[in-house]
Image 1: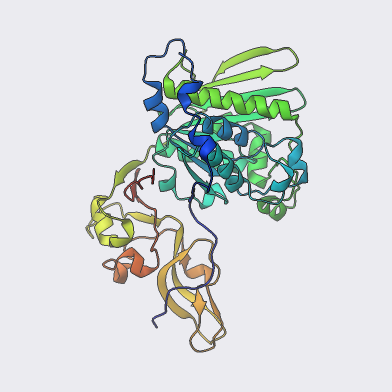
Image 2: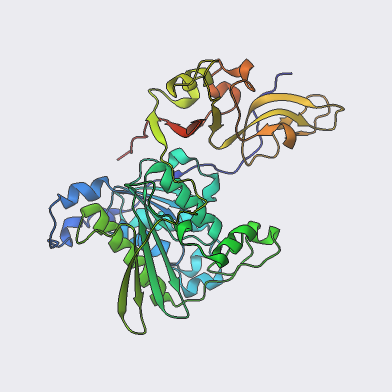
Length: 425
């Protein structure tokens, strides 16, 4: 039975670009050159580097929001902000917001502030979880700043940066000791350290429980599912600001190649003593993360115009005799074979549905919503499972705005991406 595309509302699954407001003349009148000093040891053309610099933020609260706003004041080329949280009344105590921002989503709120400061900067926001973001929308950035709120996010961010070859700046605070911390994980060697390499027994327990700690101490879905309450981040605003500005300075040092290399180091500043400690970071051989680099390949035309067979051919594993059998993930989508409604028996679907979408369409017979059957819903699949659909474009199969497709063949994983979107600037 054929069905029309779903008309049910779904949550966003990728970044939305923040457009300039009606009056941003002040931002245009503040060129970077008015305050950029002649940095000691600078050998690069700073303006060209900063114009091209793209930074992704995972977490835009007290620490991450501070870092994003500081980089906006440098008019960097692109900022991508991700956070699933909303500001609450206690946010006023530590985070760079005003009373009017209470109740608003964190990522898009800070993104709008960044755009007001720097109309030149391309600013994108995603008010959702990192796990829901396609890998393809992380590819192409230069640095990732992690100021997340739970061990699961640390693991996911570290794994993705390993796979995509991205430098990760992991920043945080220890409120009781007034210590600001900044870890930098280099992208040169996938066999280098990642955040999970530093986990101890307590962090692995938190990871197993999917426990979250937040700036407000509110319940998070994964925490409430585990029956635990997130531990609030208890800290002072000046310490959070110090950590955020540390992270901004590390991003600038990395981009402009200033000073001694900071990759694979932990830097701590203690406000009680004003002593600074720098510690090298090393790979833990027992780390459960997969220290592997994806092969990233751009496709000549938009992914949604391609068929699965064409994309498998680009990945080099389109033949039926190919061994090992490739495993495919269409990022942000599940392949649904059957659904259920009030009618007796299952509904045949055989199309892609957004990963977070619980209702696909209304049954033409009983007029009730059709929901995916879990046992017939796949987040990955082999070509044999979708044999009848291999020669249909992805958009005809429900993945009209597919951003990336991963193909795993044995030990190698290839990420196929859309052509890079051009900025409107």
